[in-house]
Length: 120
Image (cartoon, rainbow, N blue to C red):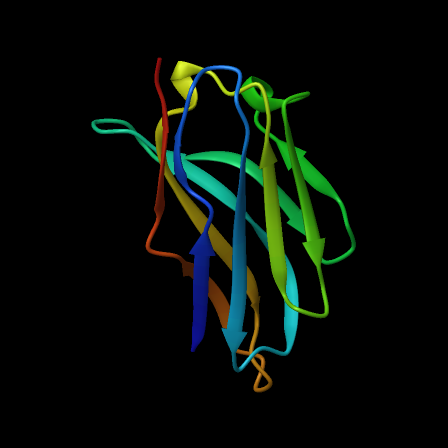
């Protein structure tokens, strides 16, 4: 099993910054991809930013230039630096981990979510 520990959500004014962290632990052999998705009431969960173990990144168009995802492979931790936050960034942000266990079972695990609220 994989456990994901998320932190860093909160409330901020428009234009402000927040940094989210997600640390994976458990029986992990490889880390293929980790990242962040977000969801608002009545809408589907959407990709925000993901990073592979090799460092390749993918961002939603709406956050490009404002958000930066990074990783610490040794700690199996990803960070999402969110700058110039907008009202529409308000959502529950979920960490996602894709990887494999030592017995090559695949993982596609989700964190419990952390609330990010941008309001004036």
